[in-house]
Length: 340
Image (cartoon, rainbow, N blue to C red; front, side):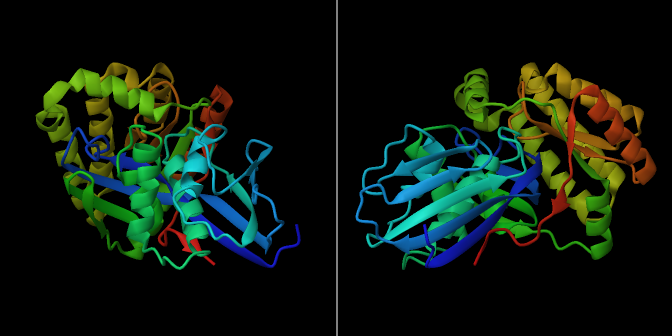
C-alpha cells in the first residue's frame, strides 16, 4: 500500500491505581490516584486511495504477529473485539483505505490499563480522519464505552482517563461515569525522584479484568457503594494524593501497602501467591510500598516504590528477574494522548 498520508498516535499506560475499584458502576462514587507511564501504546495509520473493495481496512497487530481485514461498514466483534469495537466508534470516511498498525512494549493483560490505552490511541488516531474534532475527554468516554457498552465488559473509568490525559492525576467520580480529573502539580524534584524509585514487575501471565470484576461484584452485593472496602479505598486515595504532593515517599509507600491490604481483605485471590512473593522479595530490599495493579487476580503486575538507593534497586531488579518475573522499565508521561 502506497501511503498518501501517515497518522501517528501514542497513549500511555497506567500504573499505581490507588483507590482502584471505586471508579466502577457498582461503587457509584470514587477517588483514584494513578500515574501515566511509558511503555505507550503506538498506533500508525497509513492512508491510501480507495481500492474499490469492502474490506478497506487492514489491521496489523504487531505484538501478536497477526493481520486481518475489515469492512468498516459491517464490523463484527469476532476476531479482536476490542480493536473492532474501537474502530466502530468512529464514523469512518467512505473514500479512503487504511492500514493500521498497533504495537506496545507493555505485555498484554499486565493490569496497566493497556486495553484502555489501545482504545484511546486508536480512537484518537482515527478521529483525525473525521470532522468530529473530539476532545481528550470525549476520546476517553468513547474508549470506555468500547468496553462497557459495545463489548458489555466490566471496566472502571480511570484507565481511559489516565491514558487520554497523561500525568499523575487525582480523579473524583461523583456519579458514575462522570468524573473530574485534577493533575497533580508536583515539583521537578518530586517527579524525578518518583520516577527513579518506581519499579513495575510483571508476574509472567496476563489477567482477565472483567472476569475478576464479576467475582468481586457478587461478593460485595447490592450495597457495594457503602462497603467498608470502598470507603477505605477512597480514603487511601485522598491520603496518597496529599503525601505525594508533599514529597513524603515513606507515607506514600504506606498508602500503596494499605491499598493492597484492602484488596486482600476484599477478596484474597486478588493478591495471588506470585504477587505475595514479589512483595516479600521487595520488602527484603526495604521497598517502601507495593501496589497490585488494576483488578489483580492470577496475572498482571505490581508497582514497587523503592527506598531511593539505586544500587539496591538494581540488585532487586536482578533478583526478581532471576526468580522468573519480569521488571519492565517505566517512565513518567505528562502529555497523554498525542496524535500527529
